[in-house]
Image 1 (tube, rainbow, N blue to C red):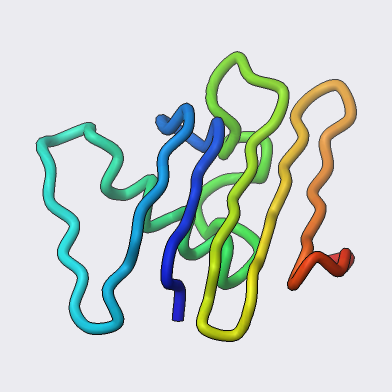
Image 2 (image 1 turned 180 degrees about the vertical axis):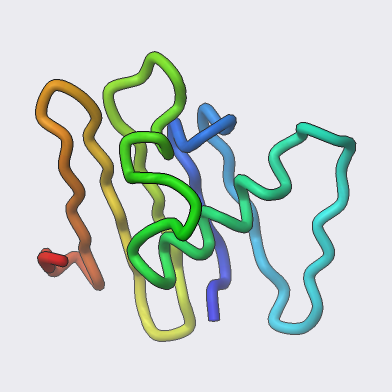
Length: 100
C-alpha cells in the first residue's frame, strides 16, 4: 500500500506530493484538475507502465524528464522517465536499481 507519493514533471503536475490514508481515500476536484493523472501515477508506480500511453507521453509537455517517488509500507519506489532525444526509464526499489 502506498503511504505517500511525489510527482515531478508528470503529466499536469510540476511538483506535487500526496499522502494516502490506510483506509479510504477520496480524490475530488473540478474537471481537468489532475485527478486521473494522480491515479495514473499510482498505477505507474505499482505496475511500471501506463495502460493509456507510451512512457514519453507521461512527461509534462516541454520537459526532458519525469519522476515518481512513492513510499509504501514495505519500502520506497522511484521511477524516472527520460524524454527525447534519449528516451528511457529506470526503476529503483529501496534505492536498488532494477531493469524492466
